[in-house]
Image 1 (tube, one colour):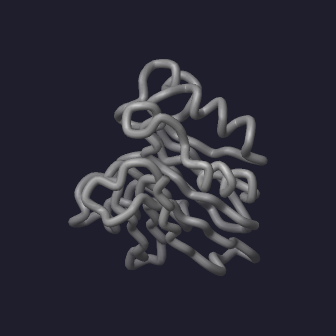
Image 2 (image 1 turned 90 degrees about the vertical axis):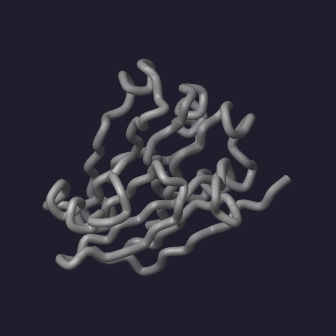
Length: 166
């Protein structure tokens, strides 16, 4: 199963639209996970039209319509793994321990907010993944998203993909 992880798209505030590269990745994925800060409902509508399956949550920059349509936390089983999806996890220091406490039944936690790619494993084995942002790199060298291959209850591959500019 091929998963696409994105977050913090911030359309139209940080970008006019999702990059074509991201839309192509949406079309190629079996499941798209968006960890919040969509900013506009049109981006949610677009991903609902393109994705085979979409799992999303709202973020701190998402208004009433997105909060009405999306949960604050999502839980889904994919390829034999239990995923939790949230927007914010707090400061980097202590993140793994907070994630274990807050998501005891998850195998993988997908989060956003910082725009900083993150891939760690907590002491009990919870995988924490932040795809960065495909539209707003902030202090990162490039905009990014993550792809995952999931099979037989394990992650076979995680790839941080840079988004080409222009």
